[in-house]
Structures are given as structure tokens and as C-alpha cells.
Image 1 (cartoon, one colour):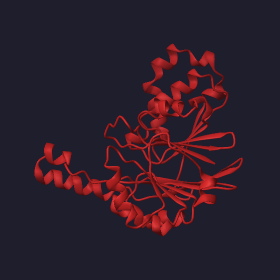
Image 2 (spheres, rainbow, N blue to C red; image 1 turned 90 degrees about the vertical axis):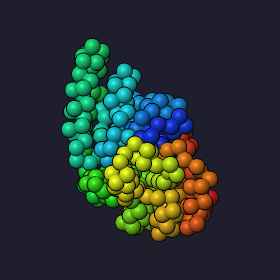
Image 3 (cartoon, rainbow, N blue to C red; image 1 turned 90 degrees about the horizontal axis):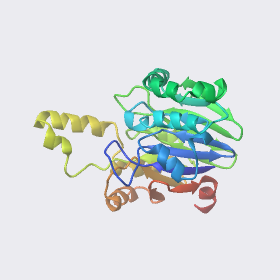
Image 4 (tube, one colour; image 1 turned 135 degrees about the vertical axis):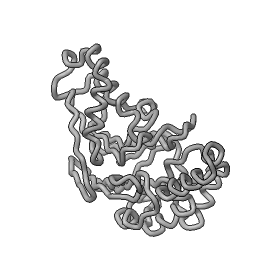
Length: 282
């Protein structure tokens, strides 16, 4: 099992970090987890093509995790795929697919994909999931883990297991002990990390009371950099990888996390891990 961080950013634009996205390679399978801004370009930079990917896992429906999906679908079709695509994620994903195809209808017709591709290669299946949903394929297994991203009702992390490796991707979440329990002892845990900005943009652009309420609500549904190490110490992965970082002070984030957990890496776009080797070298 190999993991590549395609995008480690947030909705806030950052030239160094694309939007949230991860590529998992298991045998011949290529699995995409989230498809944030710039994910398609990062996928190609990592040496892969959209046509290589057969399944896309969506942690939740926030735009920064889905906004490159239309680009991904059209590019995949341009590249003459030989198999269908499966989208896996929360309630609302089927409606999102349908709306996306309606939005792209003119382009789809002008490019004449119906003549260029078989019905099977154009098929986009959607599987809408609940907590504990599981899938087993050739050489790997996946399981959904409901997380706490209030007020988003349907938000998930995912656990992936192969014969010799295990990986959990948290998605967006507040500090959440059930996630730590589901990730107990995994080789690699990718966890979102929120560093509170010293200059809060909300305070510059919103009335004071509204700004403080917005900040309170936003901080409620992310995991602060002071809390990520605490969650990792409960899960005790062989390696913790920090992601969903945005334009941050990496040294300060590392200082916060190291207070509670020492085996970690501050994630960066295109950073790759042989997950099985993490187990053997930890």
C-alpha cells in the first residue's frame, strides 16, 4: 500500500498546497480520497492519470473536498478510460453527481463522449454510505468512520487495510475519540490539523459579535494543533501525518503536536509513504 498526499491545503488559497486529496495505491487499484482544488494536476504530477482511478472516496460534501470532481470526470473521459467510475461518500453525493453532469452537459455533448466511449466507461456509480459501511476488493478493505464535523451531519473518515498495511484518513473533524479507537494501532494516520491564525480575517471583515461567533463555530468543528497529538496518543499509530494545513507556520504546528506525540510528519503536497515500510521502520 502506498499513500501520496496530493493536496494538504484548506479552502484558503495557498500556492504550496492544493485542496484536500489523497491517492492510495494497492496492487493495480488507484483510490482517490477527496478531490479538492488542484487534485487533478497533483495526480498527474505524482505520475498518474485520472483514467487510472476507479474509485473516489468523499469524506464530506464541503466544496474544498469536492470542487475538482468535475475536472476529474471530464479529464478521465478525455483519456479514454476502459472501466466505470465509482463515487463513495455521504448522503447528497448522488444529487451532487447529477447536478454536476447537468452543469457539464453542454461540454459533454460537444465533446461527443457518447460516440467516443462505451456505456460502461461513461458510467458513474454512486454509493452513499453510513457509519461502519465497508467494502472489500482484491487485496484491500475499506471502512467508513463517522466523525464530528458539526454542523455537517454526514462526515466520515476512512480506514484502509491490506494484507500488510493499515491506514486511516480522518477527513475534517473535531478531536474525536471514536476516530482514535477506529485507528488504534494503524501504521499511518492522516489527521487534519488546525492552527488558529494570529490575525483572524473574520475580525477584519465582520462586526465584532458576529466575528466571534463565526470563529467559535469554525474552531468547534476542526482539530486544533494542540489537540492532534492527544488524539494520536490515543490511537498510537506508527506514524501520524498532519494535513489540511493551509498557509501555516510548520515549526509552530510541530511544536504543538510534539507536546503529546513524537512520531509525526508535517504533510506536504506530493509527499509519499510506503505504508507497510512505516510499520517495519517505526
